[in-house]
Amino acid sequence: ELSFTNSTLSPSYDPAAPEGTPYTLSVPAEQTIINTKAVANHKKAVVAGDGEETILPANTPTEIIVSVTSESGLVRDYVTTATRAASANNKPTMLTMGSIPSGLCKNNGEYAEYSCRFNDSNNNAVFFDPNVTDYHINVPTVSNKLNFTVAKGHLFQEISAEVDGGVCTIDNENPTETGLINCERLPMGDNEIKITITAETGAKTTYTLHVFRTPGADVE
Image (cartoon, rainbow, N blue to C red; front, side, top):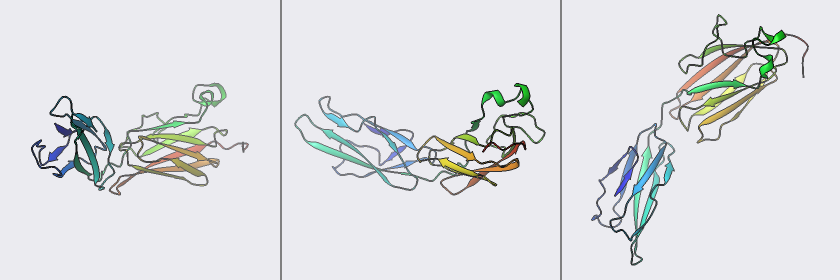
């Protein structure tokens, strides 16, 4: 047996096919990892490659080799070329905010007016929704930096971020499931942080975070 996760082998595997028969595998765009299942016809044959996971970059033919060694020592390789189309997924599954000490957030003494959370334009607390691209955040004077964790909707999404007057750095080494954004030196008053998610096809979604940092004595 020779098969792969959620993908169809072409031509169908035939143990009687001539050695060197090429196989191809067309993989769905959203499936970045495939698992190989290979079972020998003879119980004493040894299979190398069974159960292995392969990460597939888009539009890049990737060879997957399964080797079978017979009881007598003969080795036969089965070569499958897998290709995955580029994904158009340009949205994260989650965006979370950190770096503000919990003691400075809402319902805590002198800082009770600050939300330290995502709000809508009416200052009502909201959960992050990948289909909503505009949020408001109110932070105290002492919070001149914010960081965000992006749970990506696809392993090969690219993340970028920028902020007026400050600087944002990104930790996003593909392929990875999450990206980290650190924005520093936020000016007093109104700021806009724009976080852009780019799909493999080039399609983009930009999330705008309207951050209000209360004016006061600078903490730099």
